[in-house]
Image (cartoon, rainbow, N blue to C red):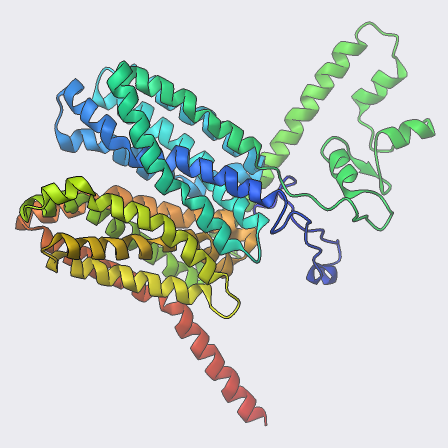
Length: 511
């Protein structure tokens, strides 16, 4: 669906029969594809890493504005939630402008949000500048980074996504150290201005997202280079099987679809108003092309959600959405309650030496890479790896409240970090469910569901703790909700079993 004129990875013929034969681009699974991994890696560092380090700024905001912890915490929650919630709407930008332009604009908006937040007079001002503006810019840069890695890889998709998303773990350490140093040396306001300048590197990452185009050795039936045809198609109208422009000029007469304004300009080159007329015509032409592109992009975006080929008609994908609503909040729960657990069992000294949250973050990095390598194995199903990782994480959430020693908590936290590496498999599983042409649209819905979960999950866990005054119930309730979400994932294997049994029954009846 989001295969704009910028983002074509294969050479398709006009005949539907020829669509079965695809000629892979030379950069698929190699070449510039690894630059996509590097670009996505830095996007995760700059976006997800900085959001995981917002606790440093949250302390500064509490001291500066003297507001309640709940109200101040909404600044970080809005930024993280909006980054993911705007996913479906970012798909419209991707379809209209392409991944490269969307990511570059997102970097500019994100940087603007950081800089404007440095002049905040109260927390409510931060809701708009940091929560909404910076969050929306982060969403515009994040989704293209994930989608472009999926488009550049086939055989090594899981490994590529795993390597790129490890930027979240590295970014958590780097951005925490950077923000802590900047706040100590220059104050939090100047630190946000400097961080806004650092966020401009998102524009560089977006510029690296070179769109796939047909290979140079692939010609159309007339023997012309498709890249040249694509260049002419964005600037001129084809007439009689040839691009209007230089071919018509060589023949000495314009094509039948030559605009009247251009005809007049060519017939009277000596007129003094010729330059102004041509300039006005080009502006009008550019506006017309942009309008057509926006209308087409909106039409494709709308039909993808509400048309006959809507993603919501895919029952397995709908179950995947319900899983996403429950998954992310359960992953955040340990980060919320681990400090309370450490203080309750008098484990602060051991935790200061090597924090439990650091164990989760470090093992999480290795989990993404290892699960990606395992999922890419030809004899192993990506879906089975995804399911096993989810079941392991659910089990760890139920077991964590039962651990009363540092060693036991460290082992469970390591399992949580490793099993949560399945986040790198989410784009791969989504692509297997809906196809590469619907990846941007579908993954936007998934991260939107994760955003809702991240926005509402922590307050829900805090509400349970306020009622029960025990962290155990927060783990049990969230673990139960997560288990319900995992049950929705079983729709996929159940559907396959039913289809296989039907085929066997029909084959036996036919015999």
